Structure formats: structure tokens, C-alpha cells
Length: 191
Image (cartoon, rainbow, N blue to C red):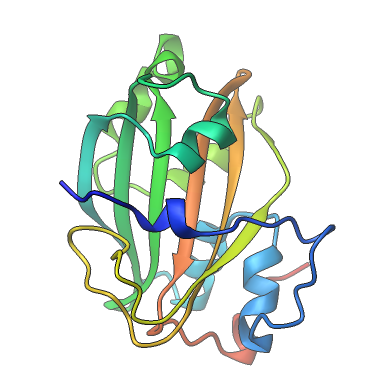
């Protein structure tokens, strides 16, 4: 078990309140889009988007994650870490924190996503609400890898996170864009 975690080393900022001028131009639109990242990635990969589950287990969320979810210390959550790949190339590392109290009633189905993308489920749920996006940058060669399944990277990683609510029950989704993600001009979503 790691003693620290990347999410505790990041300073999460809201685009409305913090300067975003240092975000790479090719990532700006992706980082601050409030629509479904899954849908955009599917379009950018011509439907060749795959989800690889790296880890899924019940754990105590990290401090930063507990704060975002307003969870008391020692509250357990289902933590799901996945790689989203377009045409076989790893594009996004995603970490989802679902408090156990969210996984009740009709939302029990979130326990069994397997390799299905969470975004499709979130954006098709009529009860879904989303809190404001936050963004952060993980410095290059950081001592804390994104996941025990991934090594550190030799360039900064940009990411975003937000709290979603389904039937008023919270879950936190964090998405980090990997260096191998190279969006093209024609991968912008249709308005």
C-alpha cells in the first residue's frame, strides 16, 4: 500500500476562480468541457474506446477525496481505477470514489461496472447533477504514481475532477490526461 497518493499532492482549482493560462492549448477544451468525456473520447477514437480496470476495491478514500465528498474520516468507499484507451493507446487514467452509502438501492449496479465506462451511465441518468469542475496539474516525475499499476511520467499530467450526484447520492470522478493522449483538431465534439 502506498503511503501517499497523487490526489493528496494536487491543488485542485476551479476555472472560475483560478487562472488557467498555463494549461496546454490542446487540452484546454478537454479539461473544462462539462459534457461526457466518455462520449468525446468515443468520437475521437472512432468508436474504438476501451476501459481497462486497474483496481477496484473498498478502501478509505484519501483526504482530498473525503473533503470533496464531505465524508467523515474512516468512511469506506468503492475505489475504481481504470485506463481509458482510444484505438489501443492509453489516453486517460480515471479514479472514481463511490461512498458505500451511495451504493444502495438502484445504485447498487455501480458495484458491477466491469469494463463498461461510467460516463455513459452518469450522463444517461435523469437524476444526475454535477458540481463545478476542478482542475489540477501533477508535476513531471512525481514521486507518487497515479496508481500502483502505473509508473510516474516525465511530463506534467493535467486532470480534472467533479462530484456527481445520482438521486442526490455523491460520487467523485477524477480524470487525468496521459502524455499519450494527443487530441486532434477534428476531435472536438459537436455543439
